[in-house]
Image 1 (cartoon, chains in turn green, cyan):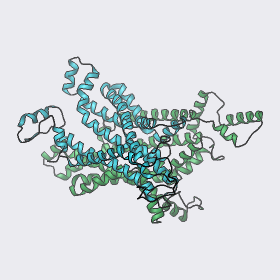
Image 2 (spheres, rainbow over the protein chains, first blue to last red; image 1 turned 180 degrees about the horizontal axis):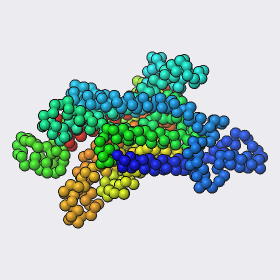
Image 3 (spheres, rainbow over the protein chains, first blue to last red; image 1 turned 60 degrees about the vertical axis):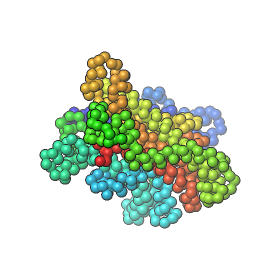
Image 4 (tube, each protein chain N blue to C red; image 1 turned 120 degrees about the vertical axis):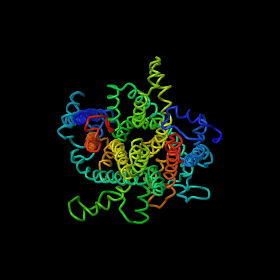
Length: 331
Length: 309
């Protein structure tokens, strides 16, 4: 178990290092000079004044030192959690923007991922043993898997908004409310949360169900299952073993899928104008706000790494091979 | 014809190293075993027919368009029917012309994305699976890190570096961010195949690694790989639709995702202009569903264990 976890942790440390380095490097390659952009707002006609202001902004954003020094400074700010001031929302720090957007993304993603995963697995496993159920779950799963995400969002917005007037189809809460812990705000937030949640949930449900169905069928035809049957074990025991074996690839699939889910989440939040990280990242790009972009990127990387680590810990409890430091399915 | 063949061909099938082999009387001759089962698999036939029809539509249908996809007809929004088979949008663009054009672009992107992912994934997967050891560890690490980096953000940054994005760029980008799926599959298969006796034999006889991989290992995972590539083809089309929807797609190109982007930004939903945004997504979903169904059918054809008795 120790070897398994050590190996995993090394992977995460390297991934974090690469993530931070890429994060630092990429925005530096972005075209356009954000300081020029900011200065154009002030309309400075005098050239000397412009130069002075430029230098002033450059040093206040820490861009006047060598690249190497900038890189080290970046590590310092990452480790201290201080990403400086946002460019497009002047006066707000990057961290405050991220922290006010994060609850929305977490509230959207965590329930959608966990619910679609567990329900999908159950549906798939049930479909693998009942032909009648299989004939309805399988086609439905394929349709769900094949739905283009933006289209599902558009259709849901159209039906629940202009056609049925059932749910609000944009923003995270009623305009005019201030985010606050009281019933009016929470009910309004839930009202706005439901549709984006539904679409993310539906889109991932089909994949899990089909994956589980196929895996259970493979496992039931496996030699180990045949051996169990030959020993006289009843079908319920065989199925239980098949389910346990089949859930391992599904679990590592969940770890792999996280990056994809977050990408899909950007589409969700843009389609529903939901005030989470995905929407923020989109705004940051439009405004060439690379401090904000860097901050969000790091947060997403940390989030994905943490989630992966949790899945690894779950693996230790589900897959005995990892405890014995043999090669498990997660390797 | 299956009745007339004896046990001998069945043994031959079992000896090729295919998982399970199709034992039992009445097995068809080996050469056209896949065709034999393929022609009798309703899922494959259904999916393939639907897909072929859609591909034909993508090739032929644009020639019947009376308007250019990005030339306005000068009229306000028109309902479907009559002169405009699928109606026009708020700007007076002909939806039939845009849709058929988008169909073409989608298949192109699917093919490009799958091709790039396959080439990179094959090389990395074979290298990692065949060499093993530290090279495998490093390649696995690269794969795992790449999977964790949100590709959409990467696209945004790289994309803004270029003045205009082409279809080739989008296809390459999708391929270069999805190859880990191929690489993982190839690596796992290579791992399990490289310790087989016939591979050892090939190695003992002094064959070079490249020729062992090409002649001994690759053919044995070809069917499996084919299925992975089909799935990648479908997911490339879906990913491209998301990118185009966010306005990050190829410039000056009408794709299905672009149509949805335009529908959203022109408030087609508020005006109840369903004909503007329902068809592009529905057609794309149909294209991917057909692929998935054909894929299940193919799986049953390639894998004797899954064939219905």
